[in-house]
Length: 107
Image: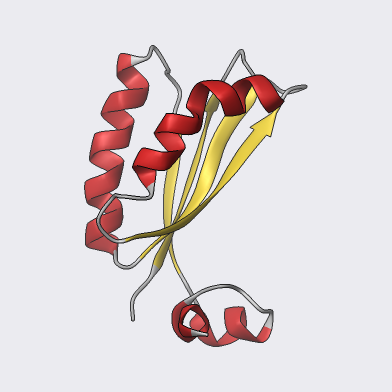
């Protein structure tokens, strides 16, 4: 299995917290339907005015397909300075530290 992690960060003026949850719940529900998507951790930093997420996808191909769609969506919403990284995963070391990846998803 060649799972990959996507890291996305961008300047965000708000909303944050509960208000962000209310406004983006439908988006969260749509993300779970994306091909190859396994999970996402939503990130926000009110003090630094940043938002983003950490995602796990089944493969680099499915991650790149999602990124094309999501980057366009963010740009349409007016976001700029979007930082995106795709990382391969060292599954053996990650599983030692209880990461919810690879074979651990079958448990």
